[in-house]
Image 1 (cartoon, one colour):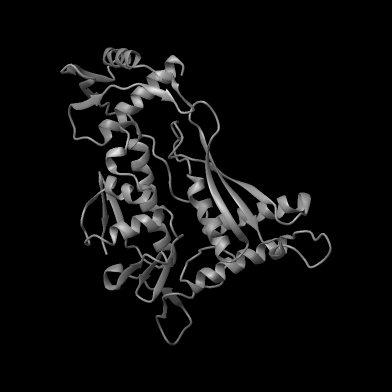
Image 2 (tube, one colour):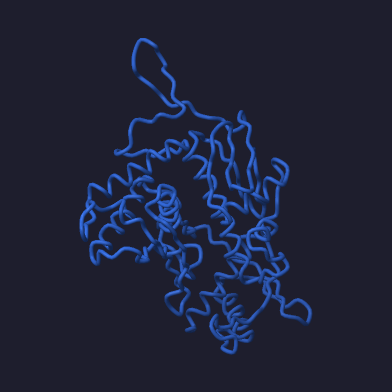
Length: 359
């Protein structure tokens, strides 16, 4: 790590501790940072860490720095500048629909297959920069593409185009930049015409997307796009004398809701909301449906169910990353529910250190 990178790392650690602590002075633990590939290499020593803290106090980034006892703990307070604008990662689709992400994936598989026309190949589909795992500041309004492209891959497996997949979070440089990939096998017959060494066609690619849309309709998924047919779920005729229809919003508070842990299916009334088995969202729902409605559950307990590791095994320096992972899982669950059911209700929420199931 260069000197600037070390200072940036300590600033981010101070920011993270401040973000999850009450306002005012915090207790800060001094630690060294080892190289992820070789524990014998030290990227940041305790001595360097200590000197950087004193420099940050001198620069006005923190204040009231003082040592606590004889250990490696310090008391400090971050200086809040009212003119600071926190960079926010945009987890919305910025006008793109679910079908746009499906079409991106199908076009990729069509083009890659046409390069070699060999069946059974595993394709490496690039999902994008991992804004949660990467050790860098995202740009304003940056979209978390892997979040949506992963969902597209799962949808394509449901209708048979993707026969198997495995997600990879790949560290691609020495600075902690993470890029996500999906390693996929596909059913080439869905993209090709029945002939010798067939060529994948645009028409067949679009047919795959239409198949996904019809599949989603069967399971009450909504895709607001130009390709799908008129919405068929939760509609009613407002006036029997004309053909105008409008969507009726569903209130989760008025539905019977249960979670089948064996199949990873959420039952909302008569609607089934399917989740990938033995994935993060499955384990989050498993934990929360074992608890009472509106009970605030510490995120570390939820992470223990997701990872299988006791919460006392969580390293202090991993806290922010792991907490973001649980928050990302909660967002994915809410997105799947709202895509499946026409509702404004949020099944789950995460506030401060607690995850809550509302229905």
